[in-house]
Image: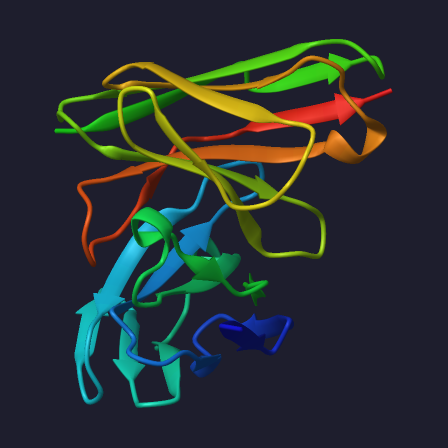
Length: 112
Length: 112
């Protein structure tokens, strides 16, 4: 069974304190790995897609990387507005209409 | 640009009552459509997906059903709600293939 595990479950940082969130997965023939940001009471907002090991994507203070077994979301000099739950999802081969398998997320709090 | 709408935003229903949640997508044609449920402490769980009008596939056995009466309309229904149906329901669309899904802002459903 395809599994997606995110760690840590929660992370509290000071403003400007850089860190990384981890997403490990067990899926054969990964078609894509997706990172989302979710604010309380809202739907997930798409951030990045990664397709192959070694690939990197950047957006403002966020950088996502991918290896054969895990992905990292690096947050550089975060600001309070980066506080949110960050979700990782994988798209396995042959999934129903390309359905995604999600991790439980990392709840990130950035303190001013 | 594409947009996705879900309503209502919140709903409180008694056990045994019927349910109808609606989702519509604008700015695209023939999208893949999805219903997910997000329960506290758990990841998003795919409930239903559709690749076209009248084509519905279910990922998990449950008390709910889905329909797609028009190309960009997706409806989640139940004849009799159970307490276990409480949760945060999210609709999403994608163009298909290994590309990201885009989510609506969800419906918070509470069953009393």
